[in-house]
Image 1 (tube, rainbow, N blue to C red):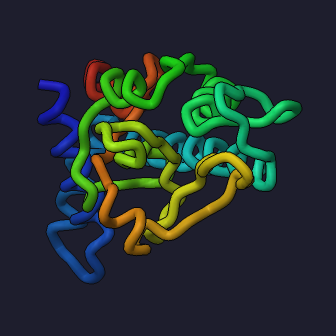
Image 2: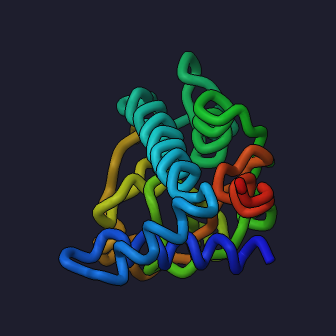
Length: 188
């Protein structure tokens, strides 16, 4: 049921955004009667704030050197240590330590559905999910690339990354606002 409610809310939000639509007025009326319009707007803002915080936190580590097994800015990061630290600092979530474990612990999404803050995985060592980064939008991701390099933003459409792309994942926290809204009783 909660997935259906999320889907309904997203459809309503898209219809609401359609200019000159009389259906939009009808949908607004229905949502307002059920007390969902305000909740939908709050969820939209909450999700945007969390994503902005996550990406901003990651960008704050640009230039930190790569270090195999590294998990802090003072000594350096490897790819999964970087991702783990960002999610811990920005969202208070403790992800597993290794990239393949992070892939296994997160929700599979289609590449076309990527949103800032989602994880992107690559096969860089002849094994699946051997490298991870954080999607920042516009086809770009931030990551700790390799020895001798520093945390940086790269374009996923580059031939190296395009050829090695392994999949996209979404981290769902316990306090996911969409899930909380979906499980909340309708206001009357």
